[in-house]
Every structure is written in C-alpha cells, then in structure tokens.
Amino acid sequence: MPPLVSVIVPCYNEQATVRKLLEAIYNQSYPRDRLEVVIADGLSTDGTHTEIAAFQSAYPDLRVQVVDNPKRIIPAGLNRAVMAARGEFILRLDAHSMPYPDYVSRCVEALISGLGDNIGGVWEICPGGENWQAQAIAVAAAHPLGVGDARYRLGGHPQEVDTVPFGAFRRSLVDQIGLFDETLLTNEDYEFNVRLRQAGGRIWLDPAIQTTYIARQTFSALARQYWRYGYWKARMLRRYPGTFRWRQIAGVFVLSFLILGLLGFWYPLAWWLLGMEAGLYFLVLVIASLQVAYQRRDPVILFSVPLAIAIMHFAWGTAFLWSLASSFLAK
Image (spheres, rainbow, N blue to C red):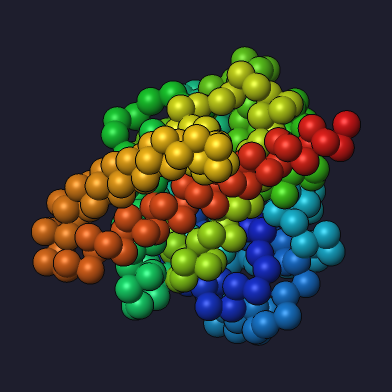
C-alpha cells in the first residue's frame, strides 16, 4: 500500500486561489485515499473558509482538515499543520500554488529512492492578474537578474541544492531536526534546510517536479514581499553566516547607492559615480528584457520588467541593511 501523504498548507485570506490549489491536489495521480490535506488558517477574514467548505462538500473523497493558526505567521502555521498531519510523508504547498498532476507521485518516488531527505521541484511563474504590473512581475520573478541562481525558479537538471520551495520529506525528519523556526516570519524553509544539511541530509531538486506559482499582482505587493524576504534573510544570516549566496548581493548594491549619495554632499564626484552606476544598472536591465519583449511582441516589457526587477533588488536590499543595522543597534 502506498504511504499516506499529508499535504500541509499555511493560509491566510486566500479566497481567490485556495480552491484552485485544492482542485489541483484532488487531480493528483497519487491514490486519493492515501492523501490528506491539512490547511493551517491564520484566522482568515475573507471567504477562504467558504471556499474550503464548498470544496469539501463537492469532493468528500479527499480528506481536508482545517486547523487554526492564531499566530498568523507561516512557520507557526506549518508547525500546527505538521502536528495535525497523520502521514508518513509531509509535503508542503502554498495557497498560491497549483501542483502538476504527478507532483505528489514524483516526490514520493524520489524520497523512497533515497535521492534526498527533502525533495522539491521548479516553479512555473504565472501572473497574478491581467494588468501590466502583474505581467512584468511574473517575468521578473523567473529571470536570473531577479532571482540569481535560485534553481527552483530557473530549472536545469536534477541536482543537489541548498534549498527547495514546498519541500517533501518524511515525518521522521521533523523528529530528527525539529519543527520550523517560529522566530523567523519568512525564510523558515531555508533555515529548516540549513539544519537538515548540518545534520548530514541532502536536498534534491528535480525539474520534472513542477508546480504553477501565482505571482503578486502589483508593484506595491511585490515590494512588501521582497521587503519581508530581505529583512528576515538578514536575521537568518546572522545565525548562519556561511549560508550567504552571491544572489543576495543586493544588500551591498543598495549600500553603494547610499554611500555614494551621502558622499556627494562633500565630494561631487561621488554623485557623478552614482549617476554612472544607476545608468549602467538600468541599461543592463533593459538589455536583459529585450529578448522577452521580442518574444512576446510587447514593447512595454522593455520598461516594466526592469522596474519590477529594480523593486525586487531595492526592497530586498534596503530591508536587508535595515535588519542588520537594527540588530546591531539593539545590542
């Protein structure tokens, strides 16, 4: 008999997407009677519960359990869901995601084969809306200039990596390395994987394991998202400095803008250098967007995608520096 798999999902105000996720889980090739879904809801105030209840009524042959997450933070929700899960295997998903039909089967197969202790795949980034901002964000979120060498966004060949999103692992792994760290409001999955690697475990990425991820709809939402990423990445790096990656150089980049801007009050040459740096940066972003603009026959991408990538860099980098500075001053 196939092992029981518990799909855990942290959730808060996801009325627009939670039904799509549940339907994607329902349509998995994995035996439905060996699947359960545990949704940790952060006391949603929209119609999330209504959507879940409607799905449960329409598809009673898939067990869906909702547990409360009064802390309203992702790691606490994951922990509540893990504790309520009955499965031998845990598979984490997000309410903004829609896994391909063979997602669960491929994850379980890879775990049983011993390819890794935490298994994940790649994202197919889809726009969160029809507006030009949503289209630009989806392109930027899958571009190397936006996400660096994050293999789960870029694809490639099956390989061992430092982290995967929406990992699948045996329940016994939690007993070995502990639950998700609730002192981190984001980056909790990366920190979990750091502890896994320190314990001698392997994280395996297979591009054949795919999920559709719905990106943010507006630049303001994108800025808030990457502010959180940068702020909490700095907090995590203070604990694990050896996990710094070149894709996180945005903090140094933003710092150079700040330093040159301040020095310009005393040394005008610094402002000239700042202008040169900003011009070169924008030129690189536009050149990088040329191919996508040509493929889509959409000249707006030439300017919208560079803007989206710049928001990602500067929101992340500014929050990263602010987090480091506030931690230092708090000592």
